[in-house]
Image (cartoon, rainbow, N blue to C red; front, side):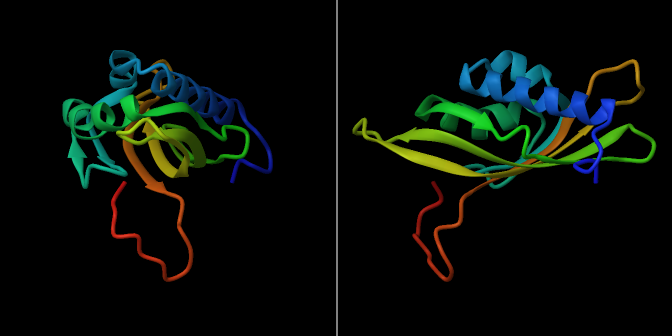
Length: 148
């Protein structure tokens, strides 16, 4: 794992993650959509599965991003694994945000994500090809009955 020794690839992937977090926080759907591959597959806190940029945006992002504030990834604490050919990377990161209920009340809303990024060559940018977000566990054996 590259948490032991940071490489230039590791730093690029962390920069990608930090930039995406800024797009989420800023509700910059267009820039975030361009950051994903056309055939991205995403699982989220709302969407069971979304295939493609348009579906990920419509089924997950457009429902969640307007209802949260202060989104950020723990970029420095993220675990980054870069493939030996340096064309794919897997990121495991915690995230935090502030949720807002329909009544306007706020609450801490955090979780963790796995993100896979790839690039066809070193001359091209990293693109997200898989995202999987989940909310923080509420405790052992606890079921809230909601999908948040």
